[in-house]
Length: 160
Image 1: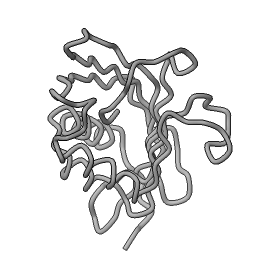
Image 2 (image 1 turned 90 degrees about the vertical axis):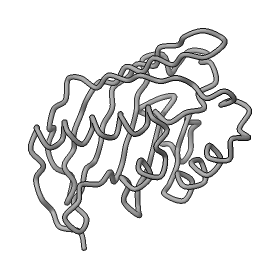
Image 3 (image 1 turned 180 degrees about the vertical axis):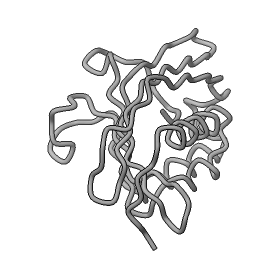
């Protein structure tokens, strides 16, 4: 059962920090459990464009999120052999308001990816739609607008 509950700043920060830690550690099953059944995960090329009609770096519904995780778990995903070493920082967390039963939270993420090819910084503004489901906080939507989304990007084969 979903109930509309306002999330305060401290709880939002703790949720985002936990999500970042799980993603960095490739704790994929735990990370996947943070999503609602109707979730959308979006990394746009153009944040003003409709993702249904314009190209995105990532535009996943809940089923595609699960498929992406299964692919990463096989160990056969060439782009993640060996796995990236990741360390992310989540800053500038703000509760921006409500959207229906969701609390909208904005933040900035900086992800350092270390690979054999070198290191890459992935930096962007993130908008989460957080919702309580059966008393637990979950992500109903996550949009990451990368600073360099309009430029040629190296392969991103991990979870932002």
